[in-house]
Length: 309
Image (cartoon, rainbow, N blue to C red; front, top):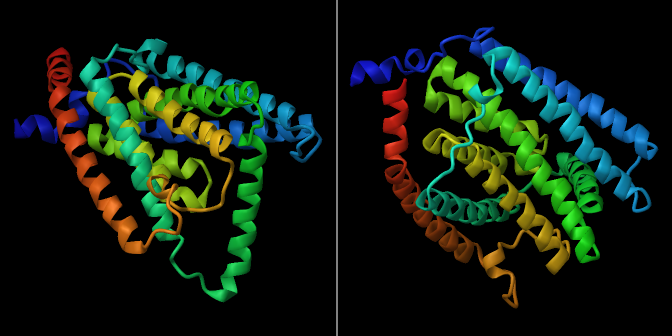
C-alpha cells in the first residue's frame, strides 16, 4: 500500500497526453489568463466605452459573460482536446449520490460562514498609516466595480445577474480549474498536491487581495470535492451557490461594506470579537464533521477509481 501511495503520480499517469502535464498546466494557465484578463477585458472596455457606469452596466454584464465563454470556456475545451485527445478525458460528469451532494453543498454553506468570520477578523487588523491611503483606494476601486456589476433593483435583473455572475463562471471556471488544470496537476504531482495547487491558483487568479484567503479556501474545497467524488457537477453547483447567494443577498438586503457575519446581521449592535470567534469555532467543528463524513461516503468512488486505473 505504501508503494502505491508513494507512486501516486505514476498510478494516475494517462495512457497518452500530448504534452507533459505540469508544463502544460502552467502554460494553459498563462494562456487563459492573458486571453481573459487582457483580451477579454480589453474587448469589454472597448465595447462599453472605457468605463463601467450605471448607464452601460447591462452592456458590461453581457460583455463579461461573453468574455468568459469566448476566452475561458472555448479555449479550455480546445486545450483539453489538444492535451488528452478527447474532451471527456478531462471533464468527468458522473452523477453524484444524494449523500455526496448534500454533504458537499452543506460544507459549502458552512465554509461561506467561516469566510465571513475570517473577513470580520481581517478587518480588525490595523493598517500602517503610510499604507492606509493606498489600501483604501484599491479597496474602493474593487468595491465600486463589484457594486455596479452586482447590485440589482428588480427581480428579472437579479436573475440576469445570476446568469452572468453565478451560472456562467461556475461552468467556465470549474471546467478550467477543476477539469483541465487540476487534471494535469494531479497527473504530474499526485491527487493531493494537484487539488491543493489548483485550488490555490484559483484564489490567486481572481486578483482580489482582500479576499485572497477565502478565495483560496473555496478553491481548495472545490478541488477537494472534484477529487473525492470524481465529478465536476459538485464544484459547479457549489460555485453557483456561492456566487448566486452573494447576488441574491445584495438584491434582498442591499449592498453594504460591513463585514459583520450573516449570523449576526439581525443583531442591534456590532458583535464582539469574542462572539464572532465563538461562532467561527462552532462552524469550524461542523465543517470538520462534514468533511469526515464526506470522505466516508466517497470511499466507494475512490475504490472504483483505483481499481479502474
